[in-house]
Image (spheres, rainbow, N blue to C red):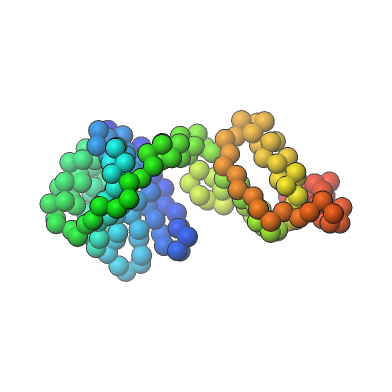
Length: 178
């Protein structure tokens, strides 16, 4: 019981976020939003999808909760009994959290393309490759297919590809951008 997978990333607002999945009879996942020099915001997702947000959490209490062998007991001892401000928020999608955990545990790769910027990230959101390159959707799919052929599990998001009518040298993979 306890922590299965944990990593630190940056959310869309530019905040540092500590994301953790648990093997627990009560808690599936937590997310601690870490703004520098501020108390933390903690989101806890229970196994049934119920989600609570706790405000103004001391970082040491959060870490004691996250590292506790019994996640439920850790939540009670280090968060609930300290009477932090909390509220119930919208239920989480448990299936999506489980799928993401499976993806991350199996060294999945995130591949993004938008308007000339190609980015690959590993299972902990670290950038593996980032290139300015013009790609058609077909070229993007070729890259993805090659990675899948060697056993990589992918999450892809592509938009704003160049059209087939643009210059040949801008849209082919014959001159490798890598």
